[in-house]
Structure formats: C-alpha cells, structure tokens
Image (cartoon, rainbow, N blue to C red; front, side, top):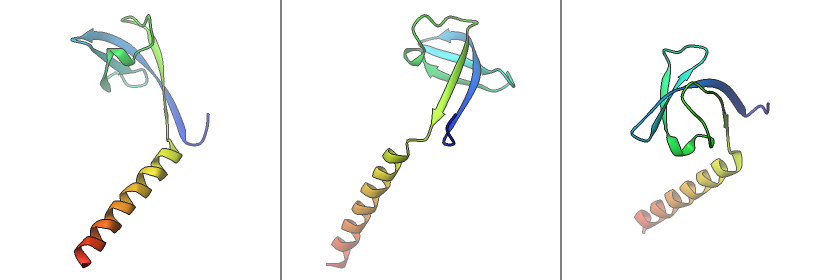
Length: 80
C-alpha cells in the first residue's frame, strides 16, 4: 500500500432509500453511509468490502494553485 493510501474493511449492514449503511469491521459502532451507486456491482447485505482511500496529490496541488490565483486576482482588484 502506498504511503498516501489507507484501506479498511467494512460490512454492508443494509441498504435504505438508496443509501448503503456500512459498519467498520474493527469497531462496528462506527457507521457511515454511501450512495448505493458507489458500491461494487453485486454487493449485498452481509458482504465484507474493502475501502481504499488515496490522496490525489496532483489534483490537490492543482486546486491549491487555482485558489491562490483567485485570491491574487481579488487582492489585485481591491488594490486598484
């Protein structure tokens, strides 16, 4: 696993109104929901799923650059 990635297992507890309720395997008191559309095809209640989270360093840097440019433009506008 990459340094900027983490993964953990969840169990698919149930699906209600298009939302999947997931329980963290290490501590089932930790619950979170996702739109059902984000689940892998065929996922059903009781399935164990692996969730991976990765930092998108390039996208983060690009977003920060765009924000910095906007701030610079706003400051320049106020200085005029």
